[in-house]
Image (cartoon, rainbow, N blue to C red; front, side, top):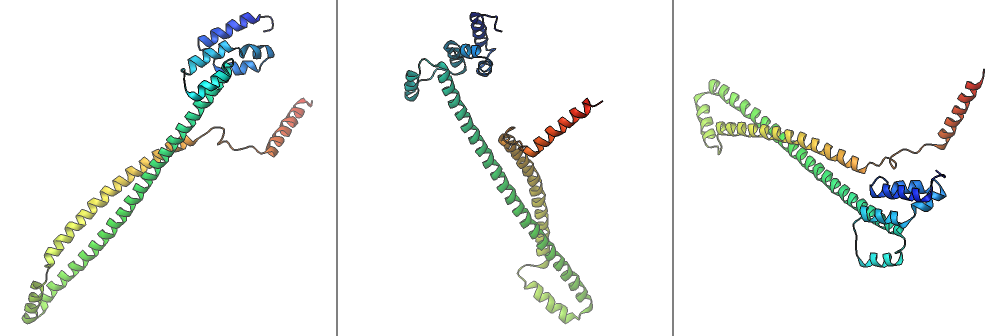
Amino acid sequence: MSALPEELWRRILEIGVQRRGVSYKDLCCLSISSRRLHRLCDEDFLWSHLLSSDFPPFFSPSSSSITSAHSSSCKYLYKLRYERDRDKKIAAHRRAVLRKESQVLERFMRLRDMETRLAEETNKMRATLAELSNLSNVRQASVALNVWQPEIIRGRQKQIVEQCVVPVESRFHVLHMELKLCKQQILGLEKAHIDEKRRLALVEEELQSMRYHPLRDQKPINSGEVEFNIKRKKLKKCEGREP
């Protein structure tokens, strides 16, 4: 590397930047490898090309003062634009996470509402079944009484039944219809509950993937464990050297 002249290195870097084979990360990595490459990678024409290719030209009151103060440092301008772009991306990502969290909360509340309605329909169906059972018992008892009671009592009973606001048979038919409707409502709510639960799981999975960060979510390694691993490797090396 030291045998190559600087003009050749400069030309290599220029071609790499122009053809997008060398990015700003590559320039930063090359600049820490040696003093010579550090000086070459800091030249303005490289960062000027990266600035014009990676970021479109921008004009604002704040940026114009900065560019006038640092007109000779294209690397500084690139760093400034990169930090601004990074902050915008972070803000956009936070907004996306907040929107996804609101979707999770909305679906969770919808799921709880479905569970409440399902419990209400189930209780209503149980009450209807209980009333139907009572009415069937009353009807069976009335049939038995019509067989065994005298004619006077049967006539009095008939008058009482006729004076009722809702006849027994009509109420029996209404309860059957209510029971059928409750069963249909429960089936529909159960299906909607399963679908909403699946959608909630998908949204929670998307939110978890958006929140995931490979370095931040990594568990820190205990220093004692590191020392133990180093000692164990040393012992293995010593055992391997012994005859």
